Image (cartoon, rainbow, N blue to C red):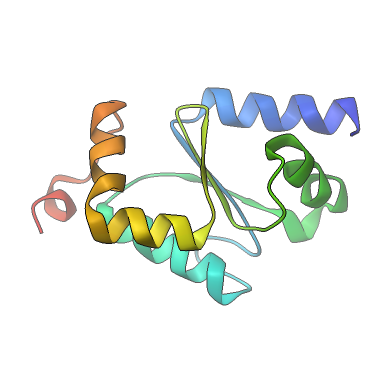
Length: 115
């Protein structure tokens, strides 16, 4: 793995509470799985940094190597790899994702949190 890409990923993951490596942008996801991940975070009222892997092939492969996870999107909360859209969906449905965000002290939009 390119050490410059690895450092860039490490910096993003460690300096942002929530990071989503995805295809496309939060405003315009380029695949259904990324769209689902953005929707889940939106329903929870989570502010996050979206990283479009389609704009940089090094990051697209690098994030897979970094996490040892073969698919995108990939969610990180407070530096911890959570998983992809299927895991996010399961955690959201069970309430585990909200609990994890709360336990890690991630700020949530109060309007979204109450619903």
